Image 1 (tube, rainbow, N blue to C red):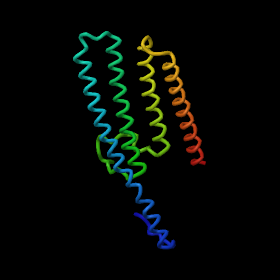
Image 2: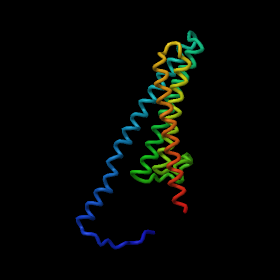
Image 3: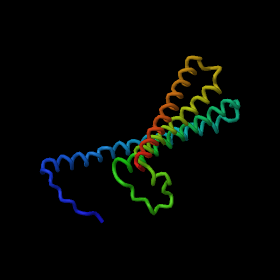
Image 4: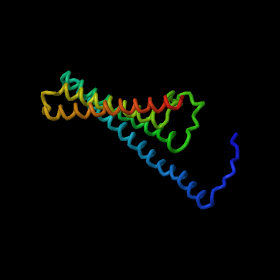
Amino acid sequence: MREHIENKQPPTLNKLEYWIFFSRWLQAPMYFGLIIAQMVYVYKFGVELLHLITGAQTMKETDVLLAVLGLVDVVMVANLLLMVIVGGYETFVSRLYIDDHPDKPEWINHVDAGVLKIKLAASLITISSIHLLKTFINADNVKNDTIAFQIGIHCVFLISALALAWTEKIMKSGKHQ
């Protein structure tokens, strides 16, 4: 039950605050756009899987491994999209009323902006790791500058994720004091 709190602000300020709060719904079409992007990744996964199946007979083991890593990469990006869609909508737009749904993700009960950032950073590190592994497997065909550049980007992702996690830990420990 919500208590009614008497609002003693001027009516103009009340209307402004209403529209500021209502503006969160402008994000809803963007989340729908991400759902469409996820459909594109499902299509890309199907195409890559079909290529792997039809070419498996003539592919070298390294090529099969690279194709499988490509599939894993597509799945990880789709997972990232799902986290952004579900977690972002729940955090920034509106509550999802799925408490009784048997497939409700466990992590959604604990999601807030800080947790979402850390989950996204971890996903980016995983995706970057897959790209780096593909590069190392195919190192004979990749320039050294490209390898160094990818390692540098991966290290930036790692440092950023550690900084986010550390900041979130500091913020959470301050709340409990």
